[in-house]
Length: 111
Length: 114
Image (cartoon, rainbow over all chains, first blue to last red):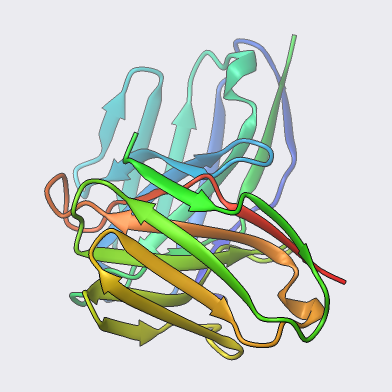
């Protein structure tokens, strides 16, 4: 089982749609969880950290289910500018803080 | 903006030649990382550093070496480049001041080995 698994997509949605990304991780000792966004030919950029209680930032909501080892990201009222690849990222812990990346899910928002 | 620059941004080199990529940061972060990104793979860790002269291997370290002689610079060297090392290389820092594990990335170096 891969350490971090995501649906590769692509997800093609119209503007204004709600879209959900899911991610599972294999290491139950993982300590921190993130969603990054990566535009074509650009570096990954931190979108959100994911907390056990769930967290929301505007149109974006992230959820963590430790028992199921499952992370989600919900985007409401999607915009054309949300088109990108979304990377699920976990850290197995330890002081070095290494990150384990999923392969990403590509999102295309159409007019 | 985490103040990270990478150089060169693009490079084409021949098989067997040595190549050094540079990552430079301006904010005195202790932790620095080198990743590579290839189609069909997530970002994979090559090497990381947890201080000046303190480095360790990541998941895909074979064929790569690193050095960190001062806090602001982390160098990645391909001793003898191979075509399998054609990739996009990203440097990252961990800002322990903002959160424990969030990392911030430089703009990347596109390396082609012919």
